[in-house]
Image (cartoon, rainbow, N blue to C red; front, top):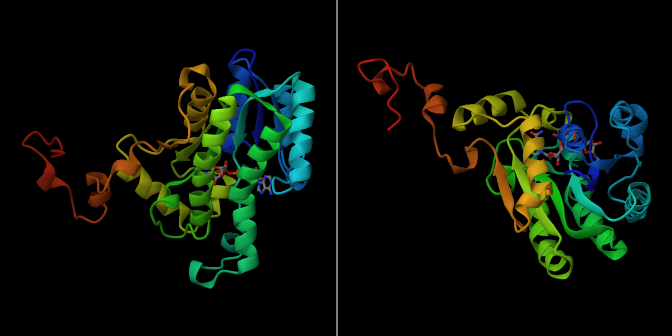
Amino acid sequence: MKGKKGIIFGALNEKSIAWKVAERAVEEGATITLSNTPVAVRMGTVSALSDKLHCEVIPADATSVEDLENVFNRSVEILGGPVDFVLHSIGMSPNVRKGRTYDDLDYSNLNKTIDISAISFHKMLQVAKKLNAIAEYGSVVALSYIASQRTLFGYNDMADAKAMLESIARSFGYIYGREHNVRINCISQSPTATTAGQGIKGMDNLLDFANRMSPLGNADAAECADYCISMFSDLTKKVTMQTLYHDGGFSSMGMSLRAMGQYEKGLDEYKDENGNIIYG
Ligand SMILES: NC(=O)c1ccc[n+]([C@@H]2O[C@H](COP(=O)([O-])OP(=O)(O)OC[C@H]3O[C@@H](n4cnc5c(N)ncnc54)[C@H](O)[C@@H]3O)[C@@H](O)[C@H]2O)c1
């Protein structure tokens, strides 16, 4: 990452996935700018991160094309040229926040969910391309969740937003790849204990269930940052238009013994004479 320049959207506090990515990128030798909503910048702890990493924060509502133009223009100016990587780590559902269930959605809230969590990704890419603000072989990553593909209790309209986010990565990946060799991918992350994560109904049980289902256990935010960095590096130059699962194996599982164990009295019948579990 030495010499690479990047923009990280969505670091709110120490728990944020984007926070860990920013720390890791700088640790690996990159220079960055940070962006979050004006409210998050005013109220949050983003300035603690920018002080620590010696980088600037450029406030922007990611649903505003004008704000995004400012982020890309200012970043190119501050960093001294087009950026090599961009992280979209943005998600919010007013329906989830207000406890509106999926069969009782408020449609103006749904529009906001989709605009903030998915269309903002398209806006980001379109602005960047028009300004020629991403360098050749630049890498753009957005964070997604498996509810885009499979139904999970409580994820609500964020599932629709994530499905669209992943589609945008493919559709824009084709055009940006052909014209400028810019690669665009989604990383589909394990449930993670962050501010956005905690908004999801039954999050603690979901974390436990996913952990039991995943052979490698849940991936945490720091591990997600490592994966993002590898996607920003030159070692993944031909990976594009993908949804890449970073979930300890969850997405390939149907049922695991540890999850099944929750519903069993015990695991004795699955053990050999030495007490070792027979995985079958
Ligand atoms: N936490 C999880 O379980 C989990 C799992 C898979 C994917 N993700 C995704 O990871 C990404 C980051 O979330 P997180 O878990 O780090 O939580 P987080 O709450 O720390 O980050 C969400 C960020 O979105 C920002 N945001 C909200 N509205 C915005 C707007 N209009 N403009 C710009 N920024 C805005 C918030 O200020 C915040 O910084 C999200 O896309 C989320 O859906 C999270």
